[in-house]
Image (cartoon, rainbow, N blue to C red; front, side, top):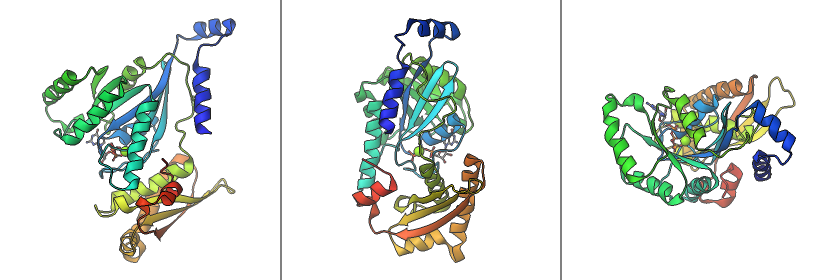
Length: 325
Ligand SMILES: Nc1nc2c(ncn2[C@@H]2O[C@H](COP(=O)(O)OP(=O)(O)OP(=O)(O)O)[C@@H](O)[C@H]2O)c(=O)[nH]1
Ligand SMILES: [Mg+2]
């Protein structure tokens, strides 16, 4: 359904056959540029942080743990010059579980389906093998790409960026190389201008007030998962999934939301619940604050924990969680 809508939207972006319409649109504004842009990079580069900042609302989970993003998330940015539909993707890593294979399939899928790639690199860390792998993905795609060097707020001497810029410029003909800070919002406006320049001539694909095509149930589940990632140690992030099992808006002043938190073992359930329920209460309070901000109303949020052994390797569970092929 979504695919159909997108295809239709793309079609309607083409120049109209009706001459009158064409003339009036030429008078009202010069031709806009619009298209799909994939954010690609290593885990933790800051892709989702950038997406949230650009969209102006939190729609993607962010944490300091790698592999925070698990599937494609689209965020829409509309400017007078045109529209960018950002496709946030999971950080590129070696697939182990079926879950990770699906995550990487989401990356490949995004690369194939967009007009421009944004390769994001954490400029505050040195290169490694993983970098090479992401870089080759971009090179082999045959797509135009912009390189974004993120986290410049952590780079003390801006001169330190020069060798990095030179290194990448020698390796590939990037359309642009742009240092930014997604977290601090540095050089973000220019980033948008530079990206729009490389998009095809087209009217906006989505309405001006749309910010994402993610279903609200999904965003809500991501907010809960983000709080879990932020409040637990290394052992928990990868074994947790969150599913919105009920989103009841029959009382619009206070929607009722039930989310299930999946883990693989009883011991992990204990960690999520915390002493006397302290952790799950804290996760619930923080997630609720984010959800209420997004929806602009109070919500009733109930969380419960389900133990499902080996869910990361089971088709049925991944389908249910919304991590599709
Ligand atoms: N100092 C600094 N930290 C940043 C910046 N951008 C992102 N971060 C931090 O980097 C961490 C990872 O950010 P995410 O946005 O989750 O990274 P990601 O690339 O989406 O990661 P995956 O989804 O795992 O691929 C978080 O702790 C962010 O707060 C930045 O510009 N400066
Ligand atoms: Mg992410």
